[in-house]
Length: 297
Image 1 (cartoon, rainbow, N blue to C red):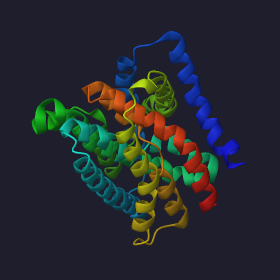
Image 2: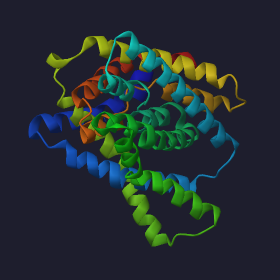
Image 3: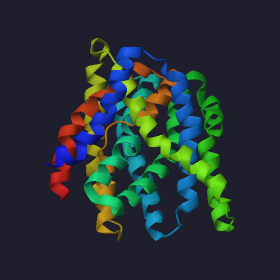
């Protein structure tokens, strides 16, 4: 029942993008640019403008950063074990350290736990988008020109500025006129469904003939198994709402983030491998998430 009620509706949206791309063979780069620079920026701004800064949000930030640090460490050790170069390590990092908490995780949480869980999921998703806007862009771009290029790329991401502006306006109690806020809200509402469709379209471009099974196997184990276990252990050290704990663990078990595949395309950081990781972990997550949702229910 959990598969039919929670996971299948989300997969059908991915399937729509997959079929569209198979038929029309669209260029994904301009679409991904639209998603990153306009839709995601509006979503990030709206969320932080409306979200009150409280203790639960603080726990979300701390737990997410601890989980990110643990995943980066595990991925670096894995890359050294396989004798990967910097570019291979960066591609593996994009596939393991960043979960698909937005266009896959939030709808899963909504169907599984309703509006109460969805509120937590959106807060986590937005903070994860900030993490990806900084660390994801860093790892996606560092192979092309070193640290300086990576840092410059981070400062070019408008979503990072949207967070600062939104928090500043909220703390100063600045009220955005209703018509302007509605315009922002309208664009923000498009972010998740459009990125879900982009994921389906990206998956349609992946060829199984080019799969690097060693790297994909490592990415799948880290992303789908190690990540939720680490999230569970980290959550034990914080006095958080039991529902928030479940949401954090489930989101940690999500497949590789579609946004990192978009970054891989933008910065030409082995996009075929990163997109393959998104495909493989997304397919495998149907089983792992069904198991985990049944376990936590």
